[in-house]
Image (cartoon, rainbow, N blue to C red; front, side, top):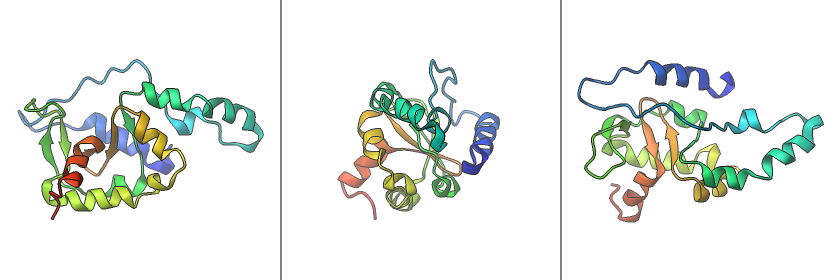
Length: 154
């Protein structure tokens, strides 16, 4: 787990104290949690178990409300921080990349190792929300698309 920096990310996420009145953390209770690196056996001698785990992945992604993409380079990326909400006009519940860093964030996502993996398309199409943990903020893919589609990046 440490090779992806997940322990540090989890520790930081659990211990982050939001600035007063700036954001309200979402509930941290979930019914199910799937982590590919733990749930899909990697050892060659367990190829049969690996295939059994991979076969239903389309259903797993389709049922997922959120998909966290842990990419080492993206986790190190400083995208700035600004309070944000997924609900239009809602109270901020997370830190998003700042507007002046959007171009860097989007190009870094497109150039990331995640974009070169075989199942990225499946994750991206079937999952409810793709979330990229950055250094100090989260990039929700669905909130980045409008900036790309409307040419709002300069």
